[in-house]
Image (cartoon, rainbow, N blue to C red; front, side):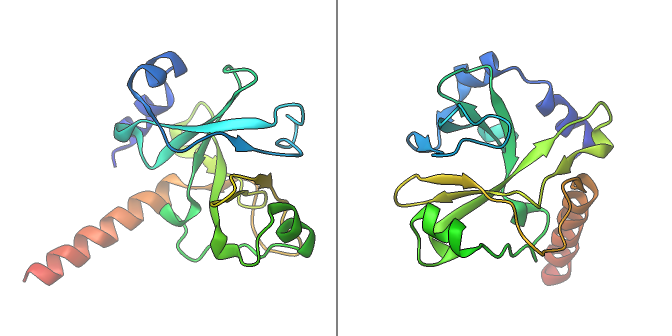
Length: 167
């Protein structure tokens, strides 16, 4: 992934995305909303194949409310959030494996500074589409974890591994 590709992705407007996207599932319900957007309870994931692994989490109440999200395993393969009993109960799950995890991405002016909030992931019950932005307790994650260098390193490692196997 080139840095220019990420930059152009971030400049894509929601109008363009809606014209070429497919829904990545049905409506999802956040009983408590997302932190700072508590009145927005229903969302959908909007994707555009050429922009993956990034997606948009779009409010159904106001299509102007969108969050860029990514599966944290795309750039941090050792990411293992531990949910509290309250989070497990709210998500109506028995095991974290019943959830899909995303993190909200922040895109500042400088593409090199793209960060993800690893401390407050968005957890989605894959069976019931019940969602919750959880705030992890006593875990050493950042709210501004830089992702671009890790993504580039992952691609380089994959390319080196493929090259070594081809020999």
